[in-house]
Image: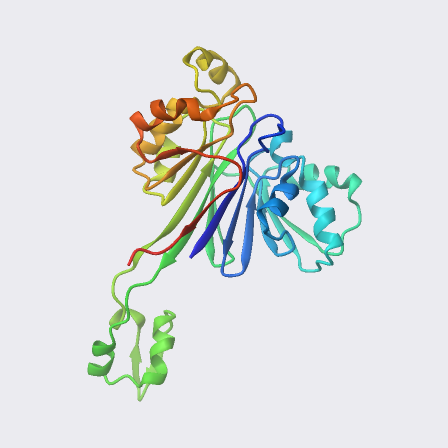
Length: 302
């Protein structure tokens, strides 16, 4: 089970009724935050979630609406007597940028481990999930992120009995480890079925449409994508600033065959994103015009 909350849905600047785009994911006691614009910690508090157990913060890029809330969040985490190290992942230059912001948050009771992404893609196993970053097309270096939870195949107890493997070794084989018993070596593939469908969340914002986004989001259980503008007369502006139209986001979600999609990162000039819902759903029926603090629990298919 993975719990997902889109803390805010706004782009460029926070509004009284719309916070800046940020995503929090909870899995097995771990918390992962993607982006941290101004006011993110307030959204976490309003959701009733905690910022104390955040293990990883993933930054898409270094524009203020995606990172300016970080100093305040770090201070709040420190004031909550956190001592466990924190990992922050982001584009090249991350260490310099975060340490510059920390001029107003110089003393923290925990260490920060920085991981700077330099290649077009990057994978790391953390918190029981695979975190994958992929380069998108914005005015500065910017990455989308996918969080994946794999699922092993079913354990074949009947086959284990036929092989005369003692019950106390079954859990070892289920973990993918080898067992040596009475001179014989047993491997997990002898008693485990094919891997089953896991869970996948893809988050992508501040970019023009690219084929890579379709590939990276392919068959995600939840795809969260920016739709900066809804009006077609804003297309030239979207291209100039390297943002995405709502129509384009819906087309990507459709082509990626995702199970569910949420639109986010609305322009401050878009007072009512719901006005574009019919247009978006005509392209991709599973696309939802997201609202602040929208939450979803993802479960494995039975």
